[in-house]
Amino acid sequence: MEPQNTPSSESPFKGKTGLARVWNAFRYSLAGLRAAFKHEDAFRQECLLAAILIPAAFFVPANNIGKAVLIGSTLLVLVVELLNSAIEATVDRVSLEHHRLAKRAKDIGSAAVLLALVNLALMWALVLLG
Image (cartoon, rainbow, N blue to C red; front, side, top):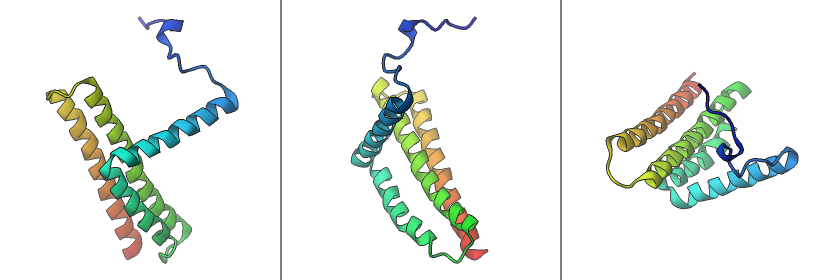
């Protein structure tokens, strides 16, 4: 049986609609980017990589789809790193003690970043060599 949605089960932060919701979501997203840049070394390194690769993509002799693949694969690394950082922060918030499930969650997040980086390398290689 599904749990009923009662006012006490909903987040107290919900309730904004329309443009107010969009504006708040935008502000929260910027706060998340600032927090990741401030606290996550890997995110800063990947931002540097993106700052080099995204402009470089415009100078690659490829059609617009190829350029989109290069830029998209670069942005994907940042997205996956943000999600991995969120997983790590949540696990650490729950408990700092060593636990096999906490390790598993962090390792899986790290593996996702690795796959995004492999994807990045493959996409750039395929477009540049193709």
